[in-house]
Image (cartoon, rainbow, N blue to C red; front, side, top):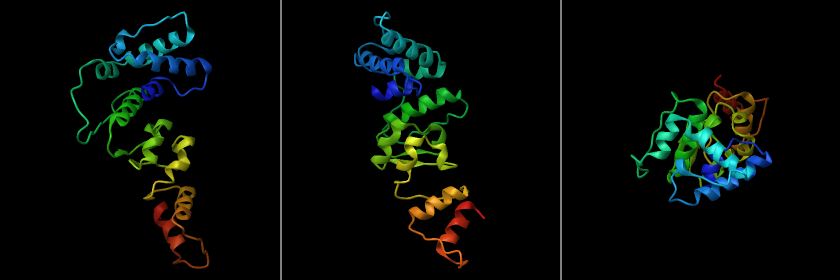
Length: 193
């Protein structure tokens, strides 16, 4: 429920949003009520925010409405491959986060710079994430350091700065006097030159 509230609400720290997110979790705990039937005291600004955000931002999307209001027509027992490129970008981000949150196995996100969110930190801790990035700075700031704790890291087409970070993480030490130094070779290969 908390993951859904994190997904449904924009990433803002405004007090109204934070209270609305909490109220949305409370409303969702009543699992007998479908998402389209959520109601509450709209005189309470937090409940009004929760209902407006849920209805306006999530259910107005035809794709998200279909996914969230129809009976499930797929399961997570095996791999789930979701091609979301043709969707509106915010709908794709929300749906990806929902799919990632439901999957219990290893998760591969080739475009983690776009789809990665702070709520995915648990995947890093559980060592269930393979993340593709063009640059480390694409990832949300709260995920940049945790992403560097993933045991296997591979750089291809990196920026020079990211290649240096990866080289240091690999325990390599620069030695500019030697062309064949493993550090220099690592940087060259990671940058692609």
